[in-house]
Image (cartoon, rainbow, N blue to C red; front, top):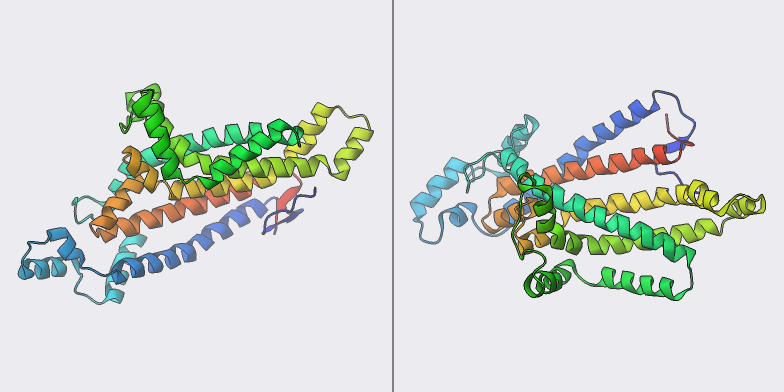
Length: 332
């Protein structure tokens, strides 16, 4: 199998190509964030309902609602509201939460830690299991073991994360009492209690991503093991271990890394339901609560921040191609 480099890559290049590539990618972040900011601002402000009414509640009088609307700037034209907001964002000010009377940037700092912890733990579980089973399944292609792993993978793809989470919660938390139902422990309480409190949500979040990584691993390894250069290496008497580690696995890791990066982005962005189910005070829970109460400055700030994280992860994945295959150089 001949691995195809990602867009923006080519053979050759000069010493400064890496710096130029990084600069170009960082410049591209600006229009991406701008487009996302326009889209999320439009969605939030075009949604039926009045944010001031949602904040004050059903029993609020009309004068109080109008007073709050004026104080928050909700009575201004949408373009004026957007201009004010984006100008503050450029200066590093994401605004203040209406409900909590707390800076949005500080809320993000407070809630990003549990989300990153949950996402990293879920991906660590998914990657370790998926790579091991994917490689074994490829080596034992067509056997009962291979068919069993493929069937289990289809289960992981088909079952929604929230449904799997409910099943795990009942079995391991309610029935067996091995894990807490919904009792998040910060890492400051100790690594053991922290991991124990997020194991069930991590497995629920990571199952689908395990299935995708495992299928890509199996397919890629099988394709490479059947390629001409592997056959040539076998004909030259190269040991099976050296063929697999130095040639097959090394080439297989390039598309696998791509799937891992996409899975990490998906897990980071889609943790809201799992966090709400298991009581993890992360970004997902923050944005769900903000949507329910129309705390739109928090919604806009969180979405922008997650978008920025996704761009950074995509950049890291691109740069890993050069580490995994030195023949790939950034274009100039």
